[in-house]
Amino acid sequence: MYKELQALTPEAHRDWRVPAVHQDWRFAAGENLVPLIYSEVADAAREFPLVFMEGKPLVYALLGLESGVNAYVGREGDWRATYQPARLRAYPFGLSPVGEGDRYALVLDAAYTPVGELGESLFDGDDKPTAFVQGRLEFLKRLHQGQGLTERLVSALRDVGVLVPLGVRVRDAQGQMKRLEGVEQVDEKALNGLDDARFNELRRSGALPLAYASLLSLANMRLGPIAGHYRQMPDQGSKPEGLDMESLFGHGDDLSFDFH
Image (cartoon, rainbow, N blue to C red; front, side, top):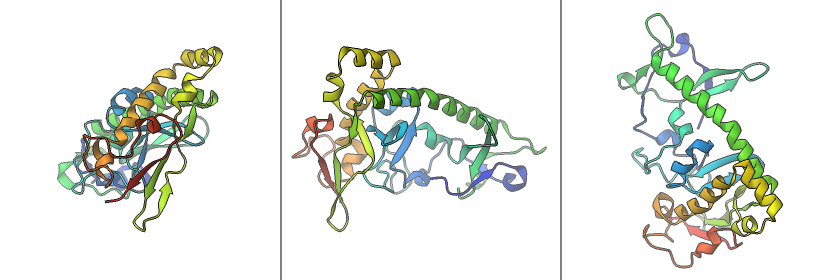
């Protein structure tokens, strides 16, 4: 999503305008995974499958089953869900590490296309950051602070061995079946099979709500935009033939999806 990060300066961005609320989400059309922080999980789980990635201590909203495809962005740039992940709302702004320690600079994606007079100014007449920019900076700080808790919770799930590969395969345009690589889910059987010591360790860590939210969220694989993007799921309100809900909850079977 971010292609050309630049430090935000009046010299480079004095005339830029950025919308306070995105109306056109095509900047995110190629994002099939977006990281979340724990405070978003309850809202996100209602609309997106919540998954994990091998080797990374984060939880993600799964927005599409192939790299470069976001089923939640329509052709006209509309957002096909009620909840909008915070990382996407923050775009085109971001934080970039500066020097040693926990120091960051506010940056902006120079590849983002400004929207003229419809957006918010970034600098005032004295070349000082506007209240809009200050608000975005505070928003990004809260996201950064929330990431630490999220990393601890995901690490707790990984430490007790309940994260397993997500069993999803996708048929590409050439008819070849490809597995969704590197993406993990909570294994319900492994979670229920934990001994008392490890289960209590997980409970004390605070990670159980995240585990259960992720398990329940996988129903969004057969509902909503992801389901509607594939031939196997023409009716978003019905269970497609051959889709066993047990396979959504870590029992080892693959789910297979076809392109339109």
